[in-house]
Length: 95
Image (cartoon, rainbow, N blue to C red; front, top):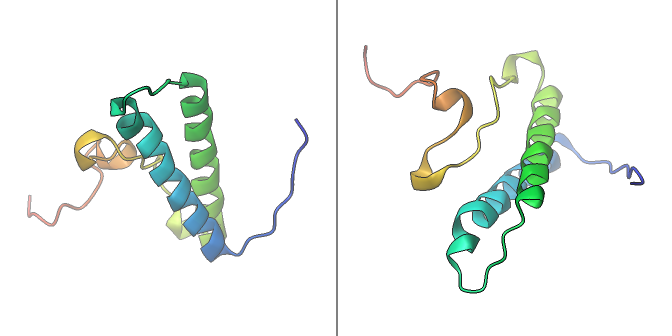
């Protein structure tokens, strides 16, 4: 493959990362419920890797204090994978 260079602002990169994550969620969990859908697991895997790279670049553009513990990809039922699943988020409840 030929590498392509694109210049984006940090805001544009964050938006692109968010849109890509939303699209990946749709392809992984919503599209399979549509009649005639043909699954492409390779594209889903590549999409997850790409979203993770985009999120990592967006985090780096924010500086060291904005780093994530892992990718936060949407799962069925609105749950998140990554750090939020492992209890590493503030739910607002006292412990």
